[in-house]
Length: 112
Length: 113
Image (cartoon, each protein chain N blue to C red):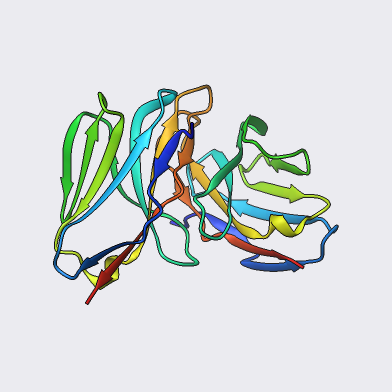
């Protein structure tokens, strides 16, 4: 089993809709989770981090963490065409190095 | 305040050659991690350097090696290049080995022909 798993998509939503992106993780990982946005050919950009069970909101973005079910999600409200990108779920592996491990990413397309 | 700087931005090499990629971490950061991102995939962890030593390594062959200098900058070396080594190579720095504050560089696009 991979440490971090995501549906590759693409997830297609109309402009103005809510986009919901999901990620599951294995037992090995720590309790620190991140969502990165990556435009084609560019480097990942951190958009959200979450460490505790529940919801964390930042503007149009809400991260949700459910440790019992081992999943973390990202909601994007009022989706815009500029939100079209690949969204990478990442977790910190809590061993001696705290290395950051990524899922394969979900491609989001927001239709005008 | 400069972020993470990687060089070169693009590189074309021939199969069997060797390549060196460079990374200067963000000011105040002393830990450097390297990732390989193939097209359509998430970044794969190669290794992490802290205090000039390789601290952790991902599932990559010995052809991949690295170095960290006293000023915290780092190099990634790949020997005997294969076509499958074509990818975006990302460097990320963080302020301490146990920190969660990773900052990524813009990456080096390596094409092996």
